[in-house]
Length: 199
Figure (cartoon, rainbow, N blue to C red):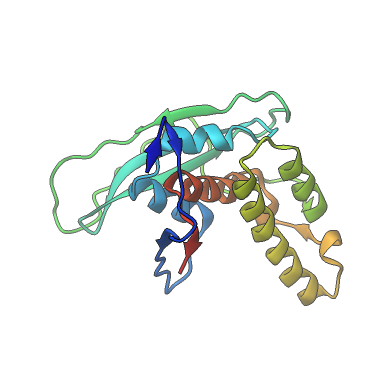
């Protein structure tokens, strides 16, 4: 319910989201699916914008995959830009929908002058740095908690695999800027939708 523009939640009722990811999922896929399900992309981007980093652009694009309408999230990382400048583009809909379906993926790849969604190349990022980054961000408490728990579980698994303390784990791809934006964006979209639990 809305009361004076503020979300009001009833404690007796949880809002659940069902995620049937039989083959796994990624942060950008989860974020895009939640935006497609109704999370306001501007609100999601505003929450992600609280991260004390720059050098990325987060956009959403309507797409068709095998004749099914969907949303795709793009996190473009601009190599070489310093952290802390807070210049992240909040764009929308850089793609186009041809309005017809041939029963197959009808995506056209265009070079729009930005980097691909490939993971940041450069030094590894320790879990403790990601934790500090999330602590420093002015995120809604539940978004911060969910993002922290996500990275903590990843650090615990990596630590167990390498017999290392989770705080000493250095992430490779998962520590890249685009992966951090993906995770925080997915947590932000859950918050915008008011989702209490994923089942």
